[in-house]
Image (tube, rainbow, N blue to C red):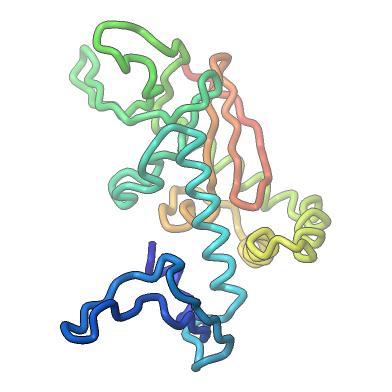
Length: 227
């Protein structure tokens, strides 16, 4: 993360982050307040805009809070293999669901998601929330996204207000969702890259309700009808 937080990418410079403690050996150490540092704006040509850099800082803070809130240490682990990792949240205990591989009595392999707190202590049941099939999660995401696209005009007021927000990340999200939904056709199959750009999380409740929460803050409720 340190690279993403480096102010040099937006064209600024923080001078004297480190300093020489021994001029004979030329040993340097990190400056933790021992000497004054100087911040210089527009020191050099930026690699990215200041707005994008500030959005990245807000996103780093948002993800850190997300990890703490849901009791996990990884925001996205191998998304190409497991795109829903850390994105399925328990509606009972607010912790993350984990993916399990189950095989039915007929030999059919299934991917299901179960609360990570269910058997945190071996042999002892913790959280009693239901499990959910991965196919159900995919259907819920597609249904929710298509509902957002089909009702785009109803969300435009919300996005327009967010564009004026003092929170740059909120404004950026609104801008992207306006772009994503402009002339968009309904999704008929899962697009992992697009899902990662739009989905914050899906919350699973015991009664079968699935709450799909998008990165712009929009929440759309779906019902899991599986047995």
